[in-house]
Image (cartoon, rainbow, N blue to C red; front, side, top):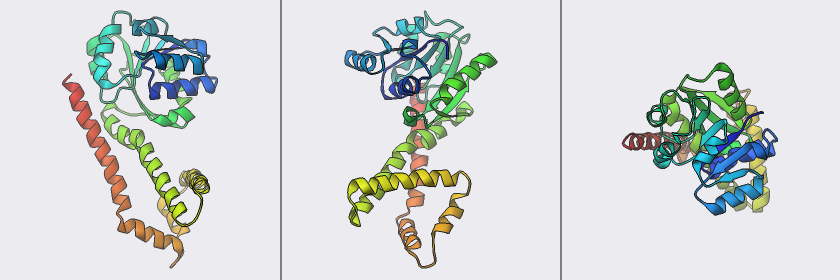
Length: 271
């Protein structure tokens, strides 16, 4: 890809994108810049990925065609106020701040700017991410295609209306933590029945990967029934899961995460 990409904020999510772009050889290190208030963080990113680093956010904007806003939502308004004087209508502004709507970004930098809002998850680091996307309809078709191409290199892009972003935050943003918890618990189960921890973990990871592939072609309920023999071991284990209300707990986890996302969105509105 031609052009330069900048990140305001050098935290975990910004690094996940940088890692995917550089290590996947989609962008050269010289095409990427990042700003942050933490000198140690900038030094780490510069040394690990060979990218340009700046202390001033305006420098990133001046050196970028596409600017990713990778800061926490509670500080985004002040960052926007800081850079609004150097943003041009030709640039693409991509915000990944949870709960911060496009409308509020436009209130600060002007409604003549091209703004994209995304909701990624941490899996972009291994290029298996989920990225929800919506924009303010000021992008040209080729610009929208460019953004999608850039993001698709880090995972699967879903174009969804902005009003659904709280749900996306719960289903895609929070769910990796739920999956990691399940992996940890099943690994502990393997240890309890006599396997060493590393073997148990590798088995569970292999099972998770294979199960995901199968579930793309058949309904999970059908697959579950195929594994469950009458009076067998699997149905016995499933019974224990139902007794523990695991299915209900996972549904509630998504619901609770969405509710919290909505609460954060309301707090952002008061800023």
